[in-house]
Length: 634
Image 1 (cartoon, rainbow, N blue to C red):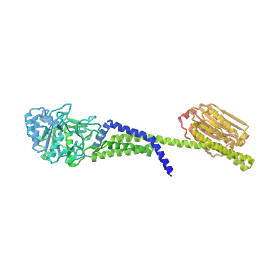
Image 2 (cartoon, rainbow, N blue to C red):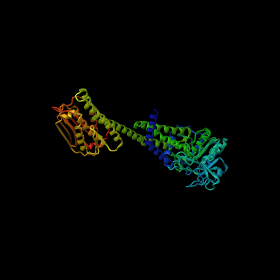
Image 3 (tube, helix red, strand yellow):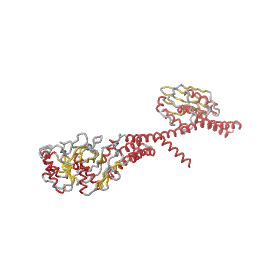
Image 4 (cartoon, rainbow, N blue to C red):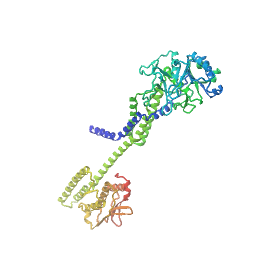
């Protein structure tokens, strides 16, 4: 029992050592490609897809957008909108008592009329946050009348595919490295939390991030999620857009100035004022929202609103922000899903079952990534895991296991061929001697010494067969042992082998009907046997031996035997004819069944039938050129 278990373990180890390396090599290759950054675009695309598929979220009432649209520009009659109207808008908004106002319009250059009016408003009102652009290209200075604590930058980093998935909260001042610069969203959030008595500080677990009331914001590190070697030069977060066709209340400049807005909508809110029209370049790109009216485009003011909303929701509502595992956890995850299809390929070893299993595994992988992103905000490496799962499951590993399975089947076929070959040798040799001895022992028609001699011959033949099979298993030289004891080297031409088989078989004394032969005819045409494997040559020689042995055993009254191999009409016909008593039984013995199978493998025909008025023909025919496209599977 233990030996059987150990044999099974060794067999499995051998199987895995042959079939698993291709899948493991591909797994390592995918990991190296990801480390080099070659998987980033796929991971971004899959992240956007899963974000789009999330359930619809409720509207966030804490953020209100005052968007200057095309109708507002027509109503004002001037673009850019003059400072006079902007000052009037901000003054009106102050009457609704918002917690903070973010003016997402560059005001470094006055737009008359109203320049001085807007400057006085900036100086008098500490609730307004203006904007600047600090990163190249196209740096833009803030309004001169606003102090630094009332200015936020609006620079957004782009990914290589042109999409905006990150938001830079703060960075070092390009002009003074000892002072940080803060984004528009962070300035507005800070005012909101200060008014709501929420403490702001440095993170405990990660001192490089911000913490609001014990809630740390997960920042983008160098290798964050699907990103490789990313560095925004400050604190960046990954965008977790609010999935709603209308995530915020949006009102127009006309609505505010014409007092068509409910005061409750703006009281104690963060109000963002900015352009929501195509006349400006304040447009960014994302694939994470399916409800955008502009295909893949989002207004800058809406982008800032999403940032503010996601941080407020994290601190107040415990809505998850997007974060990721560490490198070790991510690559362990990829390795597990990359090794899984190798296991599946070993278990199934079937194309359709493997396809179904890998499909189910792929669905489970995507579902797992989706649920973890939606519920906990964890961005796990789904794209590389799906890739290695698909290629390993449907390609290399499954093919390797299939190939090994075919190899095992070939070994089984080889063993079956060996068994058949051994049976044929025994059948054409010792069994014939045994049958001859038993027949005369029952008839008691030969002397005792002669009978003993037959059984001694049987003993010798059995021993010779055993030695021959041992030698054949150890040597690479293919050979054939006939029932007469003659050993033939199968690398010789086929017609020479057939002459040897004919001569050796007819000399066998145990076949009594050979003694009545008067006429012996043999003729074997040469044949180009380059398409014949040694296995086929072995079987053809055994066919001739079996056919001649049948004459010696069963052809009563035989006087004439003809063995011929004739090549004509692209066919080679090997036949044995006699004029004996003919076929006495219609039952097919094992030899007949075997040679029918041989004929099928050769792409030819086999027949054994009685002749008129007497005799039997046993014939095997085949087309030599067809054999090169077939395989020996007897």
